[in-house]
Length: 475
Image (cartoon, rainbow, N blue to C red; front, side, top):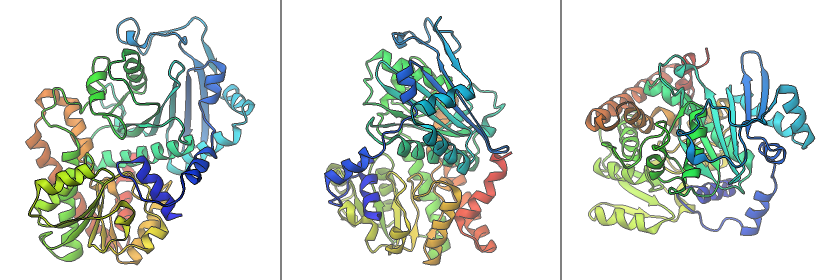
């Protein structure tokens, strides 16, 4: 089970695993579940689906509609029409009962209940789904909580990254991924002190053509409809932000007018600051010199993360699917001790610390039982293979039982969202030095306090992290 999970993770993220199951087995797994919330929209000529859940009353609601015509020119968004424009004379509006009946008609009643089960388990606000029939694109805003963004005096209520998934991926896996990331974002926003609710945008589509104004216009319209500010995430180029800025101000962290640069560096900077506190707590050391750290992934965050750890004196074991980035790291640091392993071996190397910097969801019970690490501490989101807080705490307790120090990732990997907020609010006037100083201070202090409180209470740092922020979210 653990091997298959790891293969799927590496295949979807910045790394690729070695042989751990045939291509036929993987294809069979991918073909098992073709259920989609977008099937009724496509077949009935609808454009919009809203799903809402109220965790206080345990009631769920659905709404579906046709809000625009199939031949709409998305390149005209912000020029001849806006988010509040009425775009068709042939509109269709379906209330809760009608929408549920529609999904029953397509044999998706149980699937809808499964979705509501996921919303219930994480106390989610809901999903906003927008369908582009011209491209068969499926844009989903996974909305966890809006409390921090309510009355923040801004156009945007939510924040979180926008990532792309292939159309043939099982939709339920994409939804679970988006929901988990959205939930983590809510907690991350509390930890970083920014006034936005948490969510995640997932788009099931082929790669965007940055010169195609209709593609860019659709993404911008859907983003604005959700009142969501974002930055390019997995499988989208950073240049997407620059292209979309012609239509919306709700995306940042592109290459133009960016005095801070890519957000991977600030994220890694914060993780390094937090890790120094964790090393002091775990090993009683004021330095990382002599520690062996396994860095899993050398992508947009992993590469600067490795460089920061080298600067702190650590010895590294690294892996990535792209041999060129490994070559680049070794060439930039010829005197450093950098061992290279195959990606299939990174989780079982003998090292002091595992620093995950790739896609999440890979830490299972079986994986934990094979760890040789004394600490798991990295930048990757949702490292635990879990669908809710309770499952996360259970896995954290399993690591604690093996004397492995683990802190929920959203305590330390908040540098990226702090960077995005700085760019969103101040644009060309954003101050990189001031931002890095703030990230270092916040990540260090949050980690130091969290580890100390958890030890005093006799609970895991993961459970204490949740305990410390939930009163700000679930009101």
